[in-house]
Image (cartoon, rainbow, N blue to C red; front, top):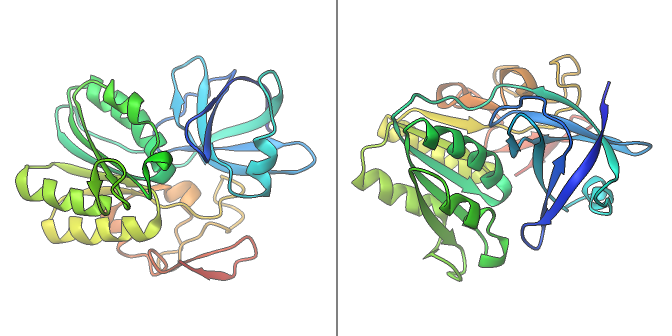
Length: 262
C-alpha cells in the first residue's frame, strides 16, 4: 500500500520539469523507481532523483494527464508513494566512467554521479537536450566531485551543436573509459548500446517500460525477446541483456499491451 507523504519543496528545473522533495526516505538507489499515487486518479512510476536518507526527490516532466495533475500540487500537499523497485546502477570505486543523459534522464544519473564521484570515480557527464531551456541539472552537476560536464543541444544554444551521442563518440576516441551509463530516450540509448558493443566497453542502460505492479506479476513491463520484466530484471540492465531484447529501440507496449513504434 502507498504511504501518504507531504511535499516539502517544489523546484521548477526547466520549462517542463519540476523536482518534488518528499518527506520520506525509502533508501532508494540510483536507477530504481517508485510509484507515486494521486488519490482518485492513478499511480505512475518515476525514477528516484535523490535519496539522502532523510528525504526523496523526483524530477518529473509535465507531459500527460497524471503529471499535469501532479503539477497542480503545492508545498504541504500530500501524495502516495510505494517502492523502491527494480535494479539500479552499479559501479566500482576508482573507475573512469561516462554518463550519457538525454532529457530528464539527467536526474537519476546525477544521483549516481554524486555517489560515484565521492567514491573516487572520474566521470565524464554528457547532458543533451533539444535546446538550452530544456537542459536539466546543469548547475547541480557542475558542483559534483570528480565530474567533468559536457553539454550538447540540437540547436547549438548551449555547448556542442548536435546530438549528445556525438560527444560520447569523441570521448571514447580520446579517453580510456571503463564503463558507460545511459538514461533517456530509447532511440538514443539504442545507439549507445551499439557503440558500447563495437568498442567492447561494458554499459548499463535504463530500460523503461509501462511498469505497474513493481513486483513482476502483472506482466505489463515484460520485454519481447527475453520475457524479462523491467520492474524486476531492470530498469537498469547490462548491455549484454539489452542486446537480447527484440523491442529495444524499436517499439514499446502501452497500458493495453499494444505495440507503439518509437
